[in-house]
Length: 176
Image 1 (cartoon, one colour):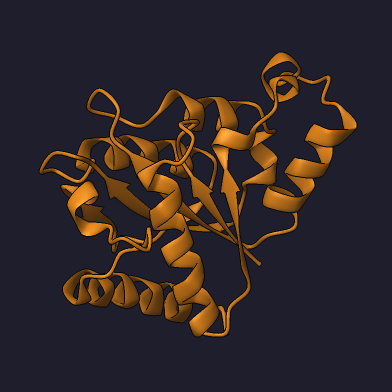
Image 2 (cartoon, one colour):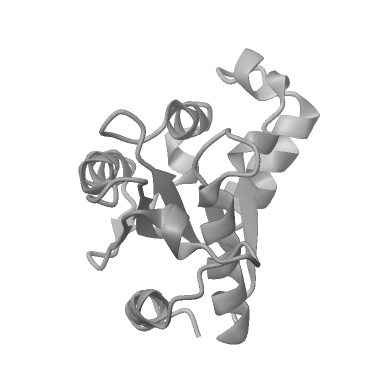
């Protein structure tokens, strides 16, 4: 199982739209995935993030973190880095739950750098958690112009870049 993290707590975000595109592409490759929308985190997660998790939070962690082998992090740029929602999510879960798992990173931005600085910083966090991070990162600049009326990425050149990243992930992390 692959968990795709939509890395913002903003409802109806471009991150969620890109995450769903990744989910559809993974499905087309015969891989099972699920989207974790950080906008859906309950107040219990924030209130009880250090040790006293509710049953609902424990089930969320089991479903989206413990029982998966790989992650796709879709992370928008906020103030030149990654979002507080991603930081809170990662901090609220025991680091051991992430150890020895695989990840790929997707940076999105309304501007022109595709959140390259945020992905660099987040790579350091994932390495600290003993996660493998694929070096092939996708940077989507001016993401609002890349999303079509169907709320998915439609541009063939972008889909080719994403498919190359997914093929690398499948090969390197031996997912088939």
